[in-house]
Image (cartoon, rainbow, N blue to C red; front, side, top):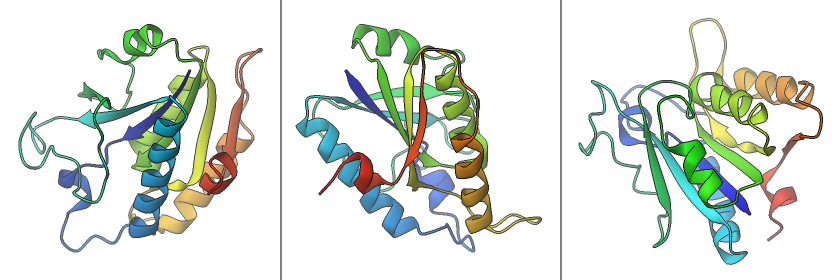
Length: 177
């Protein structure tokens, strides 16, 4: 089965005043398109949601941004670290769903999203990164566009365990309209 993991698209991180996020409205539309496509094909959509002092579990800040579409049957996993697999129910949930292919999108490219990509690639899954469906904001040393471009290049050239794949494609390549 194919599972779409949507990482940390939450109010605490994406509704910050004075932050500009790389192509956020377009990224959200691509995430929603991917989610609709995965649901329509019988796959699973799962939200990975970070909780900490800035976004306590079940608080307003912890909630997904309103523009992200959620449907009946979608699952969620709570995490407290960058790694979506550490101290969470994610791996057992994926095993229960007989997931063999993971498709990833979300926030923040260089933090939790990158960690999720790298961790998933070592757990026996075929991983697809949606190159145009992850975002971040400018950092003191690098602008958001460069961060996204850099990480897409890294993932495209990263070694993964024998027998697994790590593919970086645009959303419409993975899920034609």
